[in-house]
Length: 381
Ligand SMILES: Cc1cc2nc3c(=O)[nH]c(=O)nc-3n(C[C@H](O)[C@H](O)[C@H](O)COP(=O)(O)OP(=O)(O)OC[C@H]3O[C@@H](n4cnc5c(N)ncnc54)[C@H](O)[C@@H]3O)c2cc1C
Image (cartoon, rainbow, N blue to C red):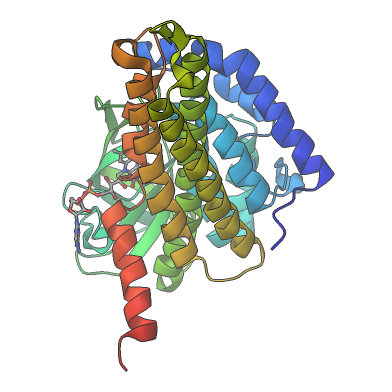
């Protein structure tokens, strides 16, 4: 296995780290407090290529491998997890789906606009009754004379109120019709979006979206409905690698914050880093960081080689998500009472980390995937 980045990709990842240190880290706490990121941020992200990470250059992307893509998302996760959630949803779920399933006209219409930050993408799958059981969605697109009419409510959608483009998963024609995916511009009449309050990832716009009889042209249907579920599973697998990468970034942020604090905080006349109880926590965090990174890179490497990644993505996500919560919690412990205040970033890391075991398939759902794989291979003697 060779997880090494090309020289070009390595430079891009380093550039992202420097950009984050300079322009993201100093503001992440304020954005969390305000519940928003600056309106001109997408334009600046686009200039760095962050809104077209794995898109080909001819549509304005930077054509990164998945290994380089997860490295970028981990850097963003370390700096501001809310930003990495936003960038991931836009790149992998929206641009990734369109690139995979869209026809040439749809790719021309939407991919450059997404890569240039002229529109943010939202991937609208979840509903009140359809979460882990994604196939139980009730949103319906009925055929009309010149296209479709889309009706339904989507829930906890990243970029709900700021998206320029929604990719909406719906039933075609009737409640038990096949799944189909539609590209829906946000300025179409009949769309109403509301923000919801969240525990963490507060700077990232998340909310509910009502599609109330939205008229769509025939050209809004993305791909063949007979293949929609396979495409959805594929982009969700790739998305899970990003959530795992984001979690890895949070493990690193927690580790660095705790290590630095432990070196300067003195109790009983010595830095607390001298005490073994503190060193063991740091040792566990450093080990989890390395292990999470390897699992994420391994999944992305398999993706780049065209291998099946269902279980590799699930393994990376479940491990990294739980490592991120543990690391942030330990970082708070090492900060003592200060860790519970907003003077230090570690309480935000814990709130943000909690999402990683929920979004794009809960950790329980990931264990179901892994358990089924084991049963399939080793079930019958
Ligand atoms: C911040 C945030 C951003 C999000 N962004 C998006 C987005 O952009 N697009 C989108 O479509 N969705 C988005 N979601 C929704 C997310 O994907 C769902 O929350 C997730 O898939 C879980 O679904 P649910 O919340 O309905 O939980 P449920 O499916 O209702 O699960 C509830 C509990 O039951 C468990 N459970 C369910 N089924 C089983 C089973 N068979 N066996 C054992 N346990 C089970 C789950 O693990 C969980 O613990 C977002 C959510 C959040 C919080």
